[in-house]
Length: 151
Image (cartoon, rainbow, N blue to C red):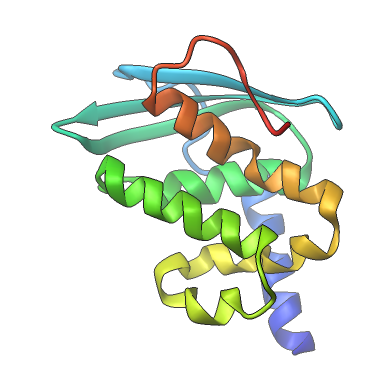
């Protein structure tokens, strides 16, 4: 278990130090801002949606390691998915962080690398860090004008 936890920590650190899809997406047609008032994380999610499919995604902003890694991994996991698939992934990810302990085993195939965040549920304040990008993603898909929050 220690080796697995070390691997998870390495993956999170890699996405923190080298976030994927960071920056403003030039061809975005959906975007939203997000803010976690508890720790000050702020980010913007940019989407290019074509025929109900996420053709492009990026984010920019500043946040803690968990927030940045979650946003980076989120962008990798949603590209090419439909809105419905993204909604299902959001629900499974949220359940991973807030639901019963055995949820990570049940949905690990669907969540893929996102299961690295399962340990975050041990630190309830950090759950908001890990879910900020996801709440902001939902806001972008709805064309929500006001910033998304974790509250």
